[in-house]
Length: 317
Ligand code: CP
Image (cartoon, rainbow, N blue to C red; front, side, top):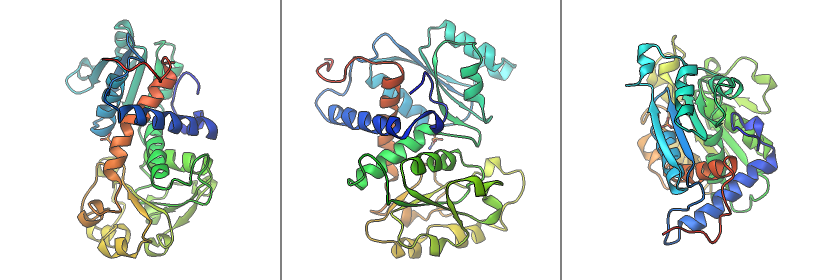
């Protein structure tokens, strides 16, 4: 991996697998009596969040603390950003506080790249979601979760069939997952109403379907996406009821899945819209495993980017 993690395109397939393997090693250590490793002692990780987040921000914080790094949490709300302070001045202020890694979430696609390319800071930059562009650590934690449920997948995902369903147009999660899952060899089908499929989809390495019932027959993974109403300036479907009828994972569709099929959702979920409560809470759902695995993957990414000391034999008191 380079100095930064801005996109799944920054990783080769073997580098992605290496991150999953590092997360597996960290999982074994985390299951032991000592939860905290001294690996990043003396390092500072800044969480720079210009958009709301629950899972990503908290899991980066937890990951950094489990590796003994110091953590500074910055949220645009309540900061001097509301007084007009620029990204440059904000970043340089944090750099002056000694940041070794900056985890950035921003509403603008390309914001993480801008920060990394700017020369404003010397810290590693990790993209925690930029506009509708990418969310690479989400895709890595999703791949880790899939691998944990299909143990035959070790070095690649050849033969795995994945349906990604819903608001593809606004989804950075979909983009990063398409890049990573196809890089690892999975077959990906995107399922959405035509209005929520991006222009230029024919250049993506995926199949496209407008028929959810057909598309989820015989897939291994159904990944439901949140309808991102906050990014919708216009109406993309006639009504929530109609969207749910056409593209929601309800109980009937859940019951039609193969017994080994898993249901994923990156969260936060709109229960009753893209996913019913029965589906979200069913034994097929791995939503909470995704959240738990997010900490391991973010530990692995921080560990690799910040060049932590060896993992074994150094458990702190
Ligand atoms: N999946 C995800 O990015 O969730 P948050 O917005 O809560 O971080």
